[in-house]
Amino acid sequence: MTAIVLPVLIEAIHNLKENADDDLRWVRALKRRMESLDLKTDDEPLELAQKLLELPVRRTLASTRMVAENAS
Image 1 (spheres, rainbow, N blue to C red):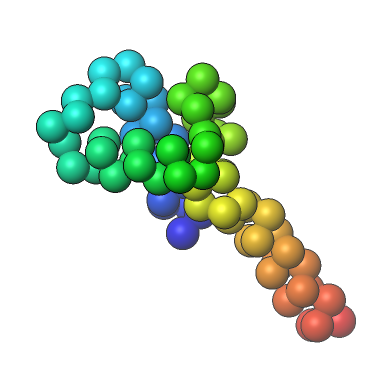
Image 2 (image 1 turned 180 degrees about the vertical axis):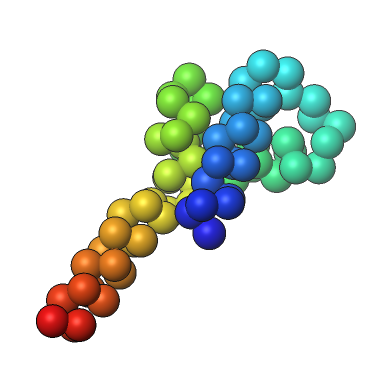
C-alpha cells in the first residue's frame, strides 16, 4: 500500500492545493476526510498523506522489524 497509495495521495493533495474542483467526487471525499481529522491543506503533502493513511510508513517499518526479529 505504501509504495502505491502514498505517492498517489501526495499527488492528489498537491492537486487539491492548486486547483480544488469541488465538482469532483474524490476532491469532496478528500476534503471531508481532512476536515474530520482537523487537517489543513497548509501542511506538507507527505505529512497530510501519512496522517490520512494512519502512518503507513511507521506501520510498515514496525512490521518489517517484527519479521526480522522473529526470523532470528
